[in-house]
Length: 500
Image (cartoon, rainbow, N blue to C red; front, side, top):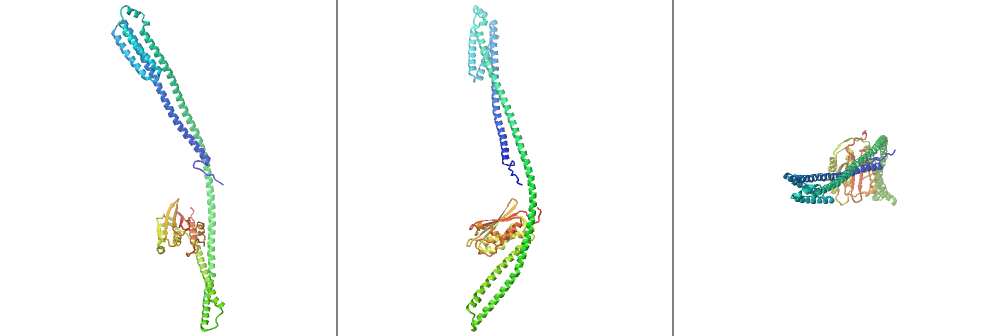
């Protein structure tokens, strides 16, 4: 059963894109809402400032109108009674009226129409002051005529016109106030609508995202259960296959032991009879030499050739072949014995083991002028004999296959990667053709020039042993560029029969 591949957020690429899209929409909405709130708040503050400004203008117009009316009332009292107290009231009211006009001029400097009206009221106030100065000097019939027609007096006309201008200005400010209050309400409504719309959009996006994530989690939970079932079945299958491989490996080792043991018996016989043939050849050769010395009839030419050349050559080939077969049988027996050996994991100091191998090869290192360096290696829990055999084989091979007439450089380094220990044996030797990288690990197979002793068993045995120790060996190399053999082992191996 195939399982779905899960991404970082969702169960597949489409789900990931949807979640990212929803999150993007949510964050964009928040950003837009923040910008909108900022802009609306600024606009609302501006509207509030304009409203306050309009109210201030209205208030100042009211105080000016009050001062203007008081000025006119005090003038009437002064004309009727002639009391100096009314003159003081007039002076005070006029001063206040002029101050209010100056303040109004400052407040309404952004409104040209109001500025023109204020200028007109200033001129009316000046004309009113001049007229009052003239009227207080009247006497007799002129004074009585002025009082009789007071309601149509020129000064009263100035006051009425001023009152009309104030009313016009108040009407315009009221209109501005209503417009600005309407804009302020519109801004507040827009603010409320923006916040509400953004909140609703965020709620929708959050709900959609949570729903999608919930579906992903349900799918993930189902996939995890499926994966757990598959792992359980896989573990059972691996255990069964491992048991079968173990039985098959034991059978192969037993077969190799039996075959090599049975081959040894006839090989010993062949080697023994070869020795007897050699002794017989020597006896015949001695007899032929004696016949030459004593003057006997010498063997014919072909017989002499067989005795002196053919027979020795044939015996030499037989001896060489039997010796090679003996070495191969010994190697097979050794592999068989190693395969049957019980491995015992223990804490190992790889640095000390590498230095021990270096000390055992000290004479060869000095003889070849090789510089062998060993850096501190990480610790490991594994079988001591197996690890020593692997490292010894890799370091010996690096020494064996150096470039002729080139000083050898061999380095042993180590590191830890994801719970595994990696030991690298690097050299500047002959190198290995990439086509032979797997071939060199085959039994009885070698690569390159065969000018060094060996049967092609060492690397095959080292890789097989590495597999037994829970690791493997890999090689990186090219012809003429040296080689790097990497031994990868678990940091803590619990043994072949461990349940973990």
